[in-house]
Amino acid sequence: MCLTCMTVSSPELVIRRSCLLTSFSWGAVVVIFLLLILSCFITAFIKATRMIDMDQIRERANAGSSQAKSFLRRLESRETLYRELMTASMLTTAVYFVWGALRSVPSVVSLFPCSETASRWIYVGMIAAHILIFLIVGKVMPERAAGDKGGVFAVRFWLLMSMLLIVVKPIERLIYFTSTALMRLFRLREVEAVTLAPTEEEFLQMLEEGRDLGAIVEDNIELFANLFDFDDKIASDIMTHRTDIEALPVDADYEETLSFVNETGYTRFPIYRGSVDNIIGVLHVKDLLFTDGDAFSLEAIMRKAWFTPESRIISDLFHDMQQNHIQMTIVIDEYGGTAGLLTIEDLVEQIVGNIEDEYDEVEQEIVEISPDTWLVAGSFPLDKLSKVTGVTFEDDEYDSVAGFLIELLDRIPEEDELPSVRYENLVFHILAVSDNRIVRVRVIRDSAFNQGASEGTK
Image 1 (cartoon, rainbow, N blue to C red):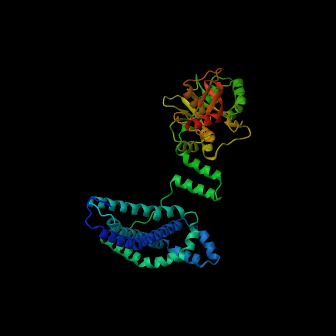
Image 2 (cartoon, rainbow, N blue to C red; image 1 turned 60 degrees about the horizontal axis):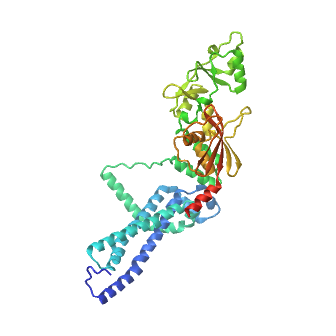
Image 3 (cartoon, rainbow, N blue to C red; image 1 turned 90 degrees about the vertical axis):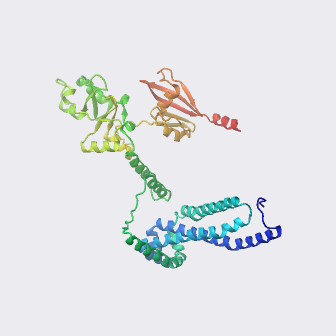
């Protein structure tokens, strides 16, 4: 009891509270509860109708279900059905808040006679509680729970909903014609409904739901995800780095060129003068068939080299390479030097995955030796290693394991050094370094380190 402004005697207060509790319990609570159930039902039905499988409804109708047949006929005028459902939802919401604000809330406030300021705060708190309960129980929960078996739910409860819509229909007609008259009065033109295309996240979520139901295979989801990523990647993300480019000097003779071609097994090679930063053309191996060793010159048979900036979006680059029948392009950095190399095959692989022929030497980037030990290539993506080991790497500057280890060591290891470094519960043993690059690493997950860390936190 609030002692600040009590103006009635104790017996009168007890009688007053008893009457209010009786009135509130058997009146407002019952109505509010029924309105919440009705809102749940209408919200779930609207969601189920939007996600309905028409083939499923037709199968039930063909099987002789009278409710399915009735619901199927009603869906022929789906726009009108949605208007009636939305009218029922709005009416339920309006009645709930009018009843809650004008009947139940003042009753609760009257149970606590106190100062006017305190009464106002109690009133505001009760209104906020009504809004929160209605949104969670009457809207959010049924919206989230009604999507799995929309067709079954809609058909099963169609008879009950159709009875409710009989009551709602006159109100919906009144609202519709009144709004139409007002729009004509103010010379407003009705805009046709536009169906918004789902976002990338929504589309992928729908695909994952289809996979969970067994309707879509995992490879198809990966294919669509790659298509969406295709517009987000730039040339530097997927290029062969300049240190891995197999290129020929322009002054190479016929024997040197044939030997180089046989060793590498590629069909196209960049030709450079002086250094790989000065690429002047591209050699097609088939052009060697029409030359002999006596008057051989790479500069005479090489073709034009195409260049693209490393910031180029690969979807635009792919279109240009298709239009101009380009199989290889040289990626250049902001200073005009060679950053890397891209082929049309590299771009296609970003969508369909790796394409390997019988001549490709398949080198695994990660090999599991034991449940806690892996052999990893230095070029292996850091985010993929995170998924394999369960360890989150916070360094965003580097994409590969090699770059991450160079950051940890703060230097490039020597070829005969082969150091080890720890990060959280992972131990990295560098096994091979070549041309200032970390080539191969052994990664060991230290389970004892995890146990010690967990014991230390107890």
